[in-house]
Amino acid sequence: MRRNLKAVVFVLPLLPSLLFAIAARAESDKVQHLRDVNEWHEKRIESLKSEFGWLTLVGLMRLEEGENRFGAAGDNDLVFPDKAPDYAGVFTLADGTVRLDANEGVEITSEGKKVGSGFLGTDADEEMTVLDMGTFRFYVIERAGAHYVRVKDREAETLKNFHGIDRYPVDLDWRIEARFEPYDPPKNLQVPNALGVTFEESCPGVLVFQIDGETQRLEPVNASGGALFVVFGDETSGVETYGGGRFLYVDPPGPDSTFIVDFNKAYNPPCVFTPYATCPLPHADNILKIPVRAGEKAYGDASH
Image (cartoon, rainbow, N blue to C red; front, top):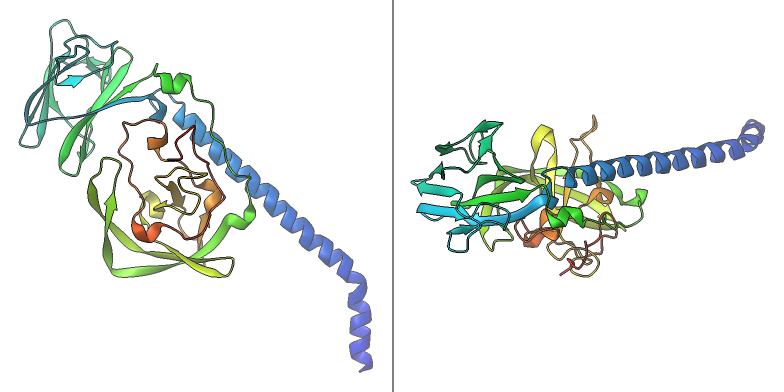
């Protein structure tokens, strides 16, 4: 008994120092997390404001089989913004391939070289052909078997009028450990998008985590480098945050195989800035029945 009493007497003077060290470590973690999230958000804003970032998107036009004339004149099949030449050329879609023929006197380039005519690579090909015409940059994308021309303008009004994005206060409590439960075989998700089209994505498994003692689950898709990508909704969607949900990348796991789901890095899809994006929406199982007050809030009046 005496030996135990001596141990208690010896430990008691150390308790204030121990508690101080624990508190200091917790404060250090909060500061480091705040710095990390703010640096991430600064890079996100830089990307949005870059010369041809999402804020410059000004057009999305579907190609029909056969010839599709394009330019600023209203009688074109694809009507470009006013600054474009009235009649710039023709896109020809045939059996899944797209050919460009520029009209005489119209300056269209790709990687600095003039393009008169030729077949174009799409975003589904190994190399996508990116075209420049004045302040415009445009290229062909494929979505659910259809081909579209996506047009950006480095002098777009959406870029000029950008005023930043409101966020919830950074909170370390929303940086949550999750375990990953693989699906074998992977699950085929039916994912809706902003075009009103449902497409199929392969889901490798489910992220399982706790919020306020309740189990939550999100189904991601694979991203590059071992990361996961999640489109999710929650009870703030359409009220405080964008009604079409938010995006979130989850970094590859650490040595203990634990994933970190940091909702402070939840961000708005491009559809909040422009009606010409093709954003995926959260499928039913990725709509959390709780409010996630972390990450980006709605931009402008884009909550609905």
